[in-house]
Length: 373
Image (cartoon, rainbow, N blue to C red; front, side, top):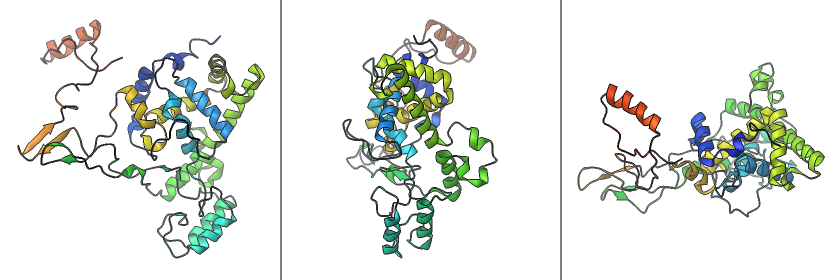
């Protein structure tokens, strides 16, 4: 039987869990990236995780934030795709785009020499030259710094901006949304500096891959370093425990059996469990361009609109030479589509005492709508 502490994350409501996690890690809401969301039944792209490992990660995250209550969980949000993209961010110098890093890539670089062919421009300096060949050689034969464009299946490490294509341009002549949408600039990767590449090498491959930081204890002790090895070892350990206790791999177990295994993992491999939880929250709340939060499902769970630009919440209206509030997203009042729940008696008493009585603020309407549970 699972202890109550082990069930803590599993029993929280999706909204409560994700809201709390989002507050604790507000950077999760800063847009990251990926292409259009995959259909739920589409095969996952090849990446660092094998098909079996991908299935285990998908099953684990689906128990951390489950859909048992009928609410979308980690599986529906595509969290495993997010993890796969994170671990596979540097595919290597795959200059001929065949999904492999091999001697054929050196030929592709030679044929593209002097051009700006993106795939053959391994170091991203705008031209295919000897530096790209040297980087490909290091990637092929085990170099110290990750090679290749830092992206996987359209999901870069850092994306450009400023706009996605989720909101249209405003029409200043009428103060209403137009029917013109910008291109999704979140899909355009920002080239990494050498320092950023070194940092991501440590993050994905560990301190031993970067001599400059081998003696830095943080490069070995932080929770998000050496991720590939940690996932490979952690998934193998979970699968082995599943085989020993229940005679089958983790992804094939019943939900109750999976919860039992996860309770053990939380007790005996706390660091890996917490890594899985953190990546589950990231995959549910980061921008869809990063592979998770499929179709914005994660944002919907916590009542977050996502990026609002370039439309914004007020639109300049040339006919009145002023800004109009959008009726669906007003700035001065609660959004009309938001559910309403009042403050608790204790909270209302506290607010009235501190803000109304002491500070002279206007009394809150009853009930004061601030969102749903």
